[in-house]
Length: 168
Image 1 (spheres, rainbow, N blue to C red):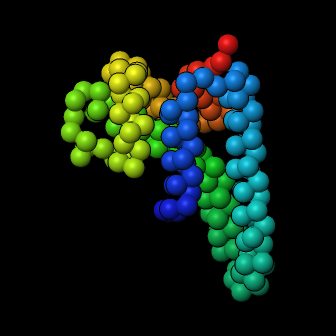
Image 2: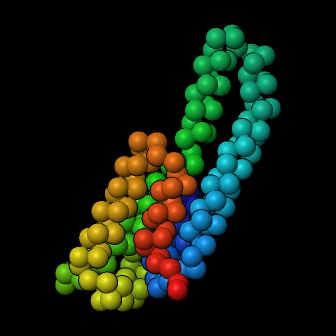
């Protein structure tokens, strides 16, 4: 599922986090909790939105078929928040991959995020290849932890703290 508006929002957030030099200590906790609450709220709204459709479906098919369809639908909806988090992590990974390419002297035409070219070039100069590689590995690990069902709140807090730093 491709939603250009959702992807633009993810990209905007990633860019802000990507270029930030220091976040307040409370930001990772507050942001992570707020984001996960918003995702949970979206899940509830999605489920409620399907109530009328499921009610009509229940009248027109067998109980077994209805149960199967309802189960698959709710399973897909329940997976949606993790898909959004994974998308955000992959978006950040793409930014850092572009910065790593630039820090290694690659041609700008290889960039995925050409619309953020100046920010990427700046970060590539400031952070250097070893830090950029470390951040890419950290994001790969975050995606892996999501797949292993580690608590998303812990993953997010850790990731934002490590990427965004903290103000003294």
